Length: 257
Image 1: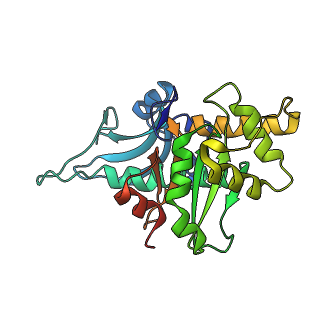
Image 2: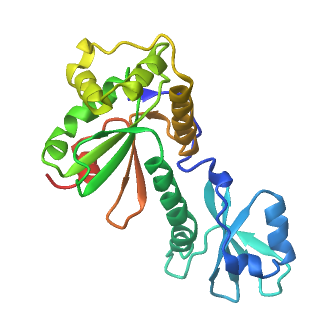
């Protein structure tokens, strides 16, 4: 697994994506909630809570956070709420109000990114991965996925980045700028270390912009390694795998053979 310095949290940096609910903004926020906003919390929804508390779901530094307004409306508690059996009552609310909407937005951003398809567009399952042409673990995952891709069950979408070596950007640009990017990627990955792919000496401005946009998206997702693999689980929630997966994780990502 090729590692490099990136933002530490999945979905970190997503404070740029404003998702406040109409219901929250239609009412005047209590003073303690406004104070939390002033410290960087972004309120995205409300929910019912026991004990006379009112729950507010927020994003803070790319993470979900729950705020509980006390019955007197003068104080706010921050953290997870447990019942008498130790059940976490907070996590389901954050999943619904924070992480699910963020995951959908990031999936849509990946759909709009500059990727190279690997497999049939009619495949019932789509998997995105941030891929560097010099990453051997990207090639390993490409090989691992052949049974699913070649039978039409999965389409891999390689979001190209150039970060690992001095010629990575040139090679990624060569793939994106190829007359037939899908065939160029196939030739590159199938050859492994013997790949004939040559970096572009000069990267066209339009291709460079696409590469920069891909890297910005990778940063926004907090990905820390290549391949950084993103897929939807059985509930439709965004999941991430860093590096080439083991057999158990491979089945979760790609589904049954």
